[in-house]
Image 1 (cartoon, rainbow, N blue to C red):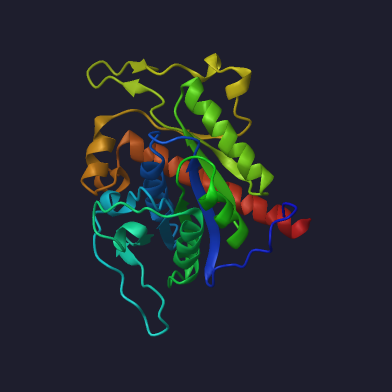
Image 2: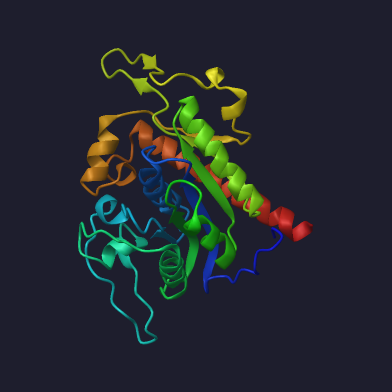
Length: 272
């Protein structure tokens, strides 16, 4: 544990927590979080998965999962997460009117994050995926202080500017003792539907500078395609709506890597 951080308390009946983060907005972090959660729960794994939208000011999960109901309370006054495609979901977007701005100071944000972690009937879950807000701020520090995190996935795009911001995010997680599981490079390339040529329209990784070099494994390279935007806007994530597509295949490979790395870290921790 990083020096100065309080001891985290596990969420009852939640086995592993994985953060999906980015150094800046607009890189497809929330879309990645949703499709990663669905990919982890897909196939023959029989894994139970939840997703927490921790972006209090700009929640995306209501749109991406096409959910707009208000959670009910159980007998213990815990919020019951909404469910879609077999995934348990919680977001500040379920608790405020659609489109209403949230104008809060940092302490209020931290209190809201704690309630969505502690006062939601999450369990039992094998994985809780937390869709983090972009950047490095109160939410990231709050989560690091409150719960034990199995690892973080950093989402970026190929441009050096985006990768520089992603590197800052990775360094922040290292400072709070959260392992960086790897990098998802979104909008990595474009495949022409007519000729099948691959075009790296945002550049290749080999052009990165020392300042933007990410010292972490690449978990997957997601191609740029309008289908991802369309399915995200419609609340029908591509892993569900187009399970045989190239994009779904990539997300499922990313899920395999994430699961494998979490298991490897658990084994290392048990033997150390």
